[in-house]
Image (cartoon, rainbow, N blue to C red):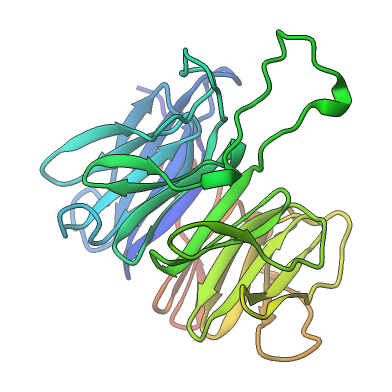
Length: 323
C-alpha cells in the first residue's frame, strides 16, 4: 500500500524521547473531518511510530493528562465540535463537552466550537466560542463560564444588524488553581476566582490566542499583530510587544527561562525578564504550527516538519509517510 503524506496540526512532549502528534492525511477532501494521531517513542527498538485514526474529528488541541483521570496518565485530543478522545494503554473512550459544537449540535441554543483543552491543578478545562468554559467533574463537563457564555443569535429571526451580539471566542486557558484561572480570547483576558469571571485591565484591542501562567503570578498572553501582554489580574496587563501588522503569534511557552512563540512567520523567542526585549527569529525553524515544551525539550511542528531542540542543538525528526 502506498504511503499517504500527512500534515501536522498539533504536538505535545510526553517524555524526553516520547512525543504525541495530531495530523491530517493529505489525500482527504478539504472539508473532511478526520485526524490521525501519532505517537513517537525513540526508545522503542521496534516500530518507533504508532498511529490511530479519529474519523469525523478535526483535532484542535492535545493534552497529556497527568492526574485528572483517576490519577493515571492518559492522552486526550479535543475536536472543534467538542468531543474529547481519551487514549490510555488499556482503553479508549470518547466524551462530549457540555453544549459545545455546531454541526453536531441539533438543538438550540448553539454556542460554537471549542479551541483548547488543558489540565490545571489536576482538573481538565475546555474553552471556546460563545464564551464557553467547562471543567470536568467526576466524568461530567460542567459550565463555569457564567456571564461570559452567550449563544449565537438565531439568524432565522429578523434582527437588526446593529443589535446582533456575539459571545466571546475564548482561545486558550491556563491557571494556578481552581480559583485562580486565566482565559484569553477575541475581546481580552479574563480571571476566574472560583466563583465568577472578571475582565482584566487590557491595553490592547487585538485578538488574543494564547495565555501562559508562570510561577510568581507572572502571566503572559499573545495574539494578533505581534501582541504580547504581561501582568496579572491584580496589577493589570502591560503591552510589551513591538507590533508587526503581518504577524499572528499563535502560542506562547516558556523554555529555559525565555518565552517562545509559534506564529505564521515561524518560531520566535524573547527574553521575558529584560525591559524592552524584542522578538528574535529562530532561524532553524521556518514553519511552526505548534510548540510544546517539557524540561529540556522544545518540540515544534510545521505542516511537513518536526523540529526538536534538545541538549543545546536542533534536530529534525522525519516522519516515514513524508520522506
